[in-house]
Length: 213
Image 1: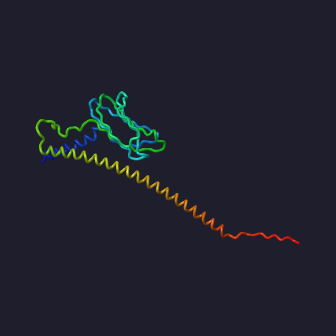
Image 2: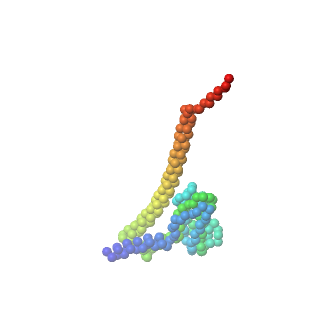
Image 3: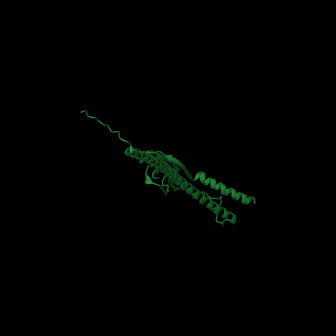
């Protein structure tokens, strides 16, 4: 019983370690005509993945650029709604990735990115041993992988929900302004028709001039 409880604690600890150590995940606002950069220290030979998506704003696009410590461009895309890029660090140092909204003059964006550095740490200290895993350890590894998939799906659906809500709110605002405009136009046309009809039936005063003999 104690061994099973210890294995469960190891699974939970590994999950927390993956979230805390292996990368950065952030949602931020990018104003118009602005550029935002982030930095990550990476050792040589480390496999990394950069994934981003524009959640709200304009045409849901942004410029993205990734550079190594020497300033060499590893990844560059213009006006992308979402993308994913995987690379292996060839140098030690600080890598920089930037998001730019400088092409937009009045629309700010909300951008989500997930920068994963390295592989997951082993679930058990002796996971790479020669002997096979026990049934309980195999079950814990399966649960660990399933939980990671659940986290990825939850993040994906949260982004989809936020993007859909933003589109719905924007559409609702446009419909409201269009309805107000139609109401004003209808009011002006109605008043104009009433004034025009009254002018047709109004009595015109005639002036009679008598000429004396």
